[in-house]
Length: 311
Image 1 (cartoon, rainbow, N blue to C red):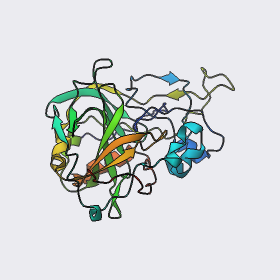
Image 2: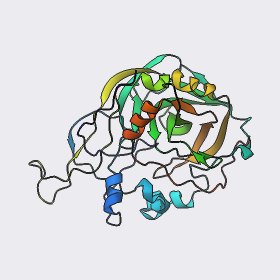
Image 3: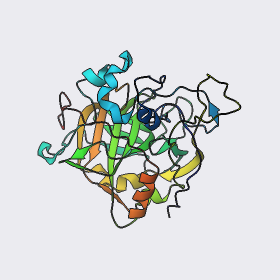
Image 4: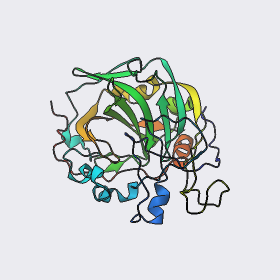
């Protein structure tokens, strides 16, 4: 049974669990609200290690200003000029994919990893030997093999379907043998009646950081960067990822397209799989997910060279 959400005192951390490693200095053009919402975050490329004080800089972008990412700095230019930016709006008028059918290996065994909050919602990073990802659960399509590095939740969902947006969306981030992100499996989440078995196996939710710690501190000299503290991390948690696949009929129906990371630097070359089925949680589970989440949906992008469901 999913335990209650305990509200603990935590502070801001660096980088983004959202698909790549993003750090940057605080930008003057961001409003205080944007700075507050963009308290830095945890990344799949830098698994959380727990810890306390850090002087890492605050990220210079915010989800509620995603329309302007390309103007922030040159490294983010593709956020504005890219031809395969994600997410996009989906519809049954596109049909469902008959190509790039995914298959899964080693998803039906327990895996261990770190449970935390990427400062926008719940997240999990799988344990693996240094620079060796090939022992992780695998997703294969065509002649490509990818490995599950971690997952995290966005609220609300990144992808709408026929104009409807789910309350949340879980992204299963897959990498190649060298650790480069190459695919994301998206599972939409909505409240139903019964608890979702995948969520019941998790520890209590870890809350997001509501803003930077700007209080006076003995270990922060005047004029120095604000102190930031990483959220709690529960290490070596065992979960079974097949429960996620089972919640959407093992992804037997899906949309797929060529896309990008959904946060700066918006790198393209990511194969997206979006399950048609929705995973339903209990009302209480959804309330706990949302209670541990901040707004993290990028504005949907215009369809261009995404090759939706194409061979």
